[in-house]
Length: 299
Ligand SMILES: NC(=O)c1ccc[n+]([C@@H]2O[C@H](COP(=O)([O-])OP(=O)(O)OC[C@H]3O[C@@H](n4cnc5c(N)ncnc54)[C@H](OP(=O)(O)O)[C@@H]3O)[C@@H](O)[C@H]2O)c1
Image 1 (cartoon, protein in one colour):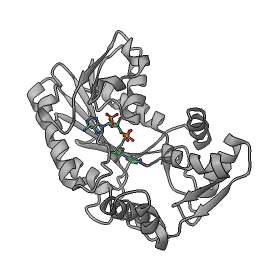
Image 2 (cartoon, protein in one colour):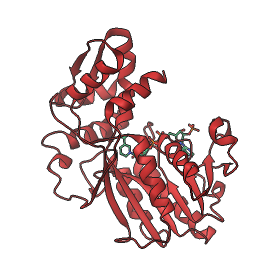
Image 3 (cartoon, rainbow, N blue to C red):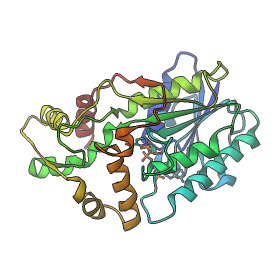
Image 4 (cartoon, protein in one colour):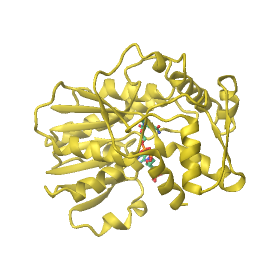
């Protein structure tokens, strides 16, 4: 089995490659990097891993020839550009490269919970656009709709280290939201890629992917306290303050779509009400405290 990961430098792409290279069926893996200097040492020396130069925004740079399966991840752009047009263009590139290769039987797209909505979900509209272009892009198509990444809390580490507090845009503080660890995403994506050729329950086959339990900001506080061994304060950013808060982090249009995304999963939001559930949910095993300890260890 030959599998391409595009792009491979993403945190979820890296996690998937680790599971693929450790798999007893010994698949070969090609990683697409726009900057080959970013290939991690752990993969570089692996006999079944090949790194190639490529940019998902440049169709001429994508070569999936010889691959049985492709994992596509579409990293967000944090610039004031039309992210929906970009998602459509990137998805068109992936589709064209699959068709040019002829060998690809299965496409797995890393998507997002809420991608079934065409309004009110902010940044997730890019995943919605990608799903529309990519259905039918290969004989077998799988959309893995992920919950909120546990790794997003890495943004809290700076103030925790400096001043023992962190901001939470997840409110009320006891409101629990599904989270997922990127290592569990990697495991789920690797399993889907390795199942190429096996019958799908539906085509596209779509499932939500969540962690073992949902977490609130207070749970995050407790997990960080366990990880750092000191008491912490969590400062809520209430709904009415979200746009101002995100505007300190991102340019204006990005801040707007991140605010809409943020509101969509809070009580009263489109995803909180979720009138269009995906239907199937799978659960990873990794708990939040494990991820927070890894994040703190890596800084
Ligand atoms: N965060 C969440 O809570 C959440 C939840 C659900 C779904 N998702 C989905 O997860 C996806 C992001 O996954 P991720 O966190 O694994 O990504 P990520 O780690 O944020 O991706 C960043 C990497 O992508 C590479 N990259 C960016 N644009 C590229 C291009 N045009 N060509 C080649 N490489 C490119 C960058 O390469 P360089 O190193 O060269 O800069 C960088 O290393 C998004 O589709 C998002 O919708 C996220």
